[in-house]
Image (tube, rainbow, N blue to C red; front, side, top):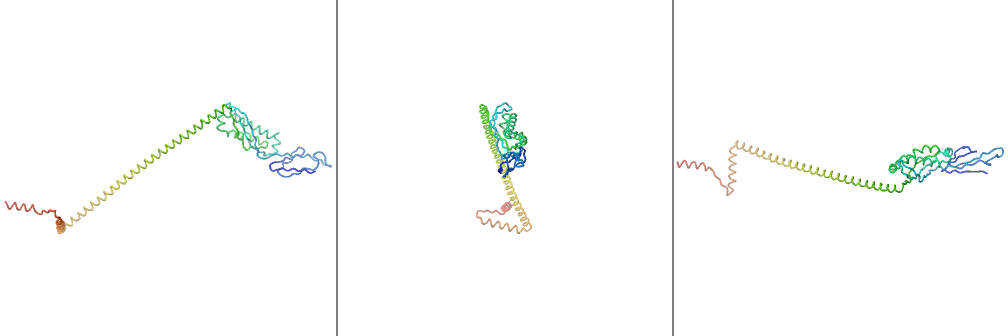
Length: 287
């Protein structure tokens, strides 16, 4: 009677003949040899064939409630979850009796060594250290028996009752201190921003005042310059007129006549001409 075996893609098969590993089977359908498993069939002896399946999927291993003493003698209970997969089916079956039990023991010992070297404060502030220690400690060892560790994480961390209460208070105090620190920093930053704003406002006001004073001074200087230019121009015109009158006395006489005509138009104007000379002539006649 013909026998067949089907191996899924999630597994690998180890083909043994009379207890000797002959090959490793991947996914597929395989036909086992004909005839009885033991003894002779005709003139030929058929070996006993055995196929052992190994799961090569990613799996999880959980270590629950491991009670461990820290370096400062505090007993804590820790649960660890490890993700792994079989990468070498032959080594997984041949190197150790049970690779899952061996992996459990190796991770347990690595966790104890790591936690025993850490204080309680270190464990609380850096829980990732345990994962890193387990990976570095067990990864190479597990590879010898065909297992690859993908990650290791602390699932639960339990303290003694009274210590748990104390830790809760400490954590609450730390949160309060952090909140107060954030509030103080916010106030300091706000005050710093206000001070900078006031300083900038004063700087702008001073700059505006200086600019206004400069503009005012420039405007006054410009007015004075224009006034001076006008006065100089008027003096130059007077100088030109004086030279013209000096060169042409008749022009001066015409100017005098125009002035008298303008005065004559004003009824309130009084003109005194040659009184001093007539008075002197009268005094001489009397004498």
